[in-house]
Amino acid sequence: MVSRIGLAKQGAIGGDRRLRPAPTVVVVNGSGSGIPVALAVMRAAPILAVVIGAAPADPALRLAFSEAARRGVAVLVLGVGPAAATDDIILTDQAQSWAGKYPGVPVTVSLRRDLDAAVTVTAASRDAGLLVLDASGGPAVDSIIRAVRRRARCPVVVIAAES
Image (cartoon, rainbow, N blue to C red; front, side):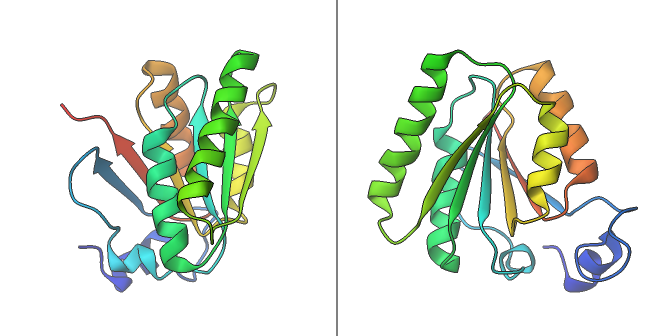
């Protein structure tokens, strides 16, 4: 369990956040639900669900919508990195499907495929209350996640595949 003091030392609460990474929680698919209370009580801002490339969106969307409904905030789905036009259509359809399961949660889908993924996600994290990333996708995705974890301006949840 991460304490409030631990979060303050990491820069999530007060202090100079430019020099400290945001707190990160790794969630393994299918293991438990919920986010530690210390991360769950952060600011009431949209949940940012990031899909990198053509990675599966459901794990990130499931957690993002669940947490957004609990907090009473919106979900911003951000597609970054290279992907085909059909992948963008699938991502938009998946987001709308999850919005149907959570009718009280507004959703916006933003596709920024031509820009640097890590820079785009970091910039978007400034206005987010929580950032949700799915780690399935290989070494290229891993490097983007490492960069985002160092620079994010909100708490980060990384969904790891079961091993």
